[in-house]
Amino acid sequence: MRSLIDILDLSTEEIDSLIDTALDIIDNPEKYAHKCAGKKLATLFFEPSTRTRLSFEAAMYELGGHVLGFSDSGSSSASKGESVSDTVKVVSCYADIIAMRHPKEGAPLVASMKSDVPIINAGDGGHNHPTQTLADLLTIKREHGHFDGLTVGFCGDLKFGRTVHSLLGALSRYNNVRFVLISPPELTVPDYLKKELLDKKNLDYIETTDLEAAMPELDILYMTRVQRERFFNEQDYIRLKDSYILTPEKLENAKPDMRILHPLPRVNEISVAVDDDPRACYFKQVLNGKFVRMALILKLLEVD
Image: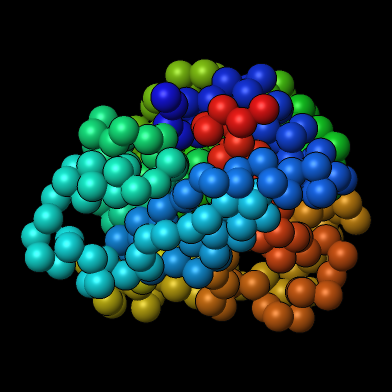
């Protein structure tokens, strides 16, 4: 039995295989319509979510399986003080696989140690979000056709952005990928990530506060929101929340084939006027997330 807690749990070969499966699902949906008949997915979301939870549910339904679970920890026994370990131990009696989101870093890892079925980390605090990363990678593959040699800009909250941390880790294993890290000084990539990933692997990266100056060299622009729920001080959030707002004017010097990604939800960091730009891919990401989660469920359930 295997779980997915961190994107680095997967080798590049396994990631490529999942993407290939997702592409086959896109081309041949009828082939997969009954692959998980009789199987049950439990969604344990201790933190609010729209896209990720519904994406998992849609993925399982399209594989012919069933879904149970909760979307609010207040409606679960966690509100009575039950531990994550006990909740998972109970739910693994009912389900074949569990997708779990939790506000505490490391909670899905603890759950995987106690569960009798595979655990998928659907986001743990500011730490990791591996299935969003798989959605991001599938989107990049469908738009650019490859990962090697790309210049990828991450913009916004790079300190607490778990999607940024996961995608940095995944892309770092491909060849000649260059990173441009765009953020206010207070929201830069955490030192541990710079030390353990970027510097340790001698990756090509720069840090800057200037989005417009970086724009012409980017193949991918990964925008993120400043996350109110990660701040202890409301005044800091208010001061930083509109640090970067992407508008059509700011895209004038961007490459024609640059692609704009965002893990969503969007608040104010991408103007709705950008939505009609052919380079905008954030709603495509949502759809790609469903396909790649289908591929992941099949892999972890060891369905041929």
